[in-house]
Image (cartoon, rainbow, N blue to C red):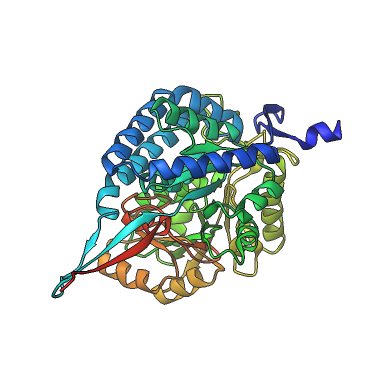
Length: 467
């Protein structure tokens, strides 16, 4: 029995902790075959025109959209996303994919240089080869598509290794590409163990790895790739902050921050986990935020009335419970009574939302990534204090500022150690903007025209005519 289980991948649904998907892990022969097929297919695919690639990728998006009802139900059962919100990820994939498909022509355009006497010079962007995409479960389509589309549009082949929690996402993407008649081998998926993933990264046929996940996972990816001199893109953790200035529209700030902190049960790398509010509006913000959070309905995600589903697993929920309990023991004030959310029980994936005040940076809940439905709020007395607190973090993915003074917001934003600054909005990725992080939030870049750079290599041409 143990030998059988070691070759299988089981996905337990957070709804009832029962096995929802069971898949065989790829063996060494299947991995070798996939790599060989990808390498061969890429040599043909790189010869296609950008227009041909665009047509196929747009058809893939069409096929994916047509299956959104099934996709939404699978997301509900695999990760606990409330069914009322699950189709939103389909819409998000469509937005990002369409933008990156259409951006390819300009992003991959040959750079023509001023000619010298008898000399022509230019720089081309050329595909790398075979790209391995390692995707997480929390936004399984959005995170994966960030790299898949530009990689394929640039002329690469892609092998997708998806999280063990979301294997059906890899299969849905594969099915959509097949319907679009993408040549065989250009996009493949494999269900892999951690050790098999490590072995693939070390294989000479993998030229780039795009990883989204934990800091620990990112370190393991870097170690596996060490010494190979290949590209490694890492989107890692976050402890994203919002700053509410004294001139902010409090009602709008509350609406945005609460949604940014609790959507997907707080399981978002760029979700709001800590908030700094100016003293002049602090009490108003806390009162309105607590009232709004109390309106959430915690329940089974397949119930259309549910607005807050379970976390991905009980262990993740218990981790957040531990952070909250520890903070309260240290003096934090909890504004939400868990008894109003009967499904919240120790050892359960169902966790009540929580708003904490009287917190500080000595508490884990303000410094360590929570990845759950809890937000800590601190009072500040100046922009300078807010900047110092926001930067006092090992992470630097996004930060949000709520204010009516755009010039002040930009001045503050210039001082923040983050990859993306948002003003009067949070927890959103604009596909036209570069998605990147600093410090332990990772390195590299996806989305925007810049997202193509790491998935291609520059090749220079110096053509001197014979005298």
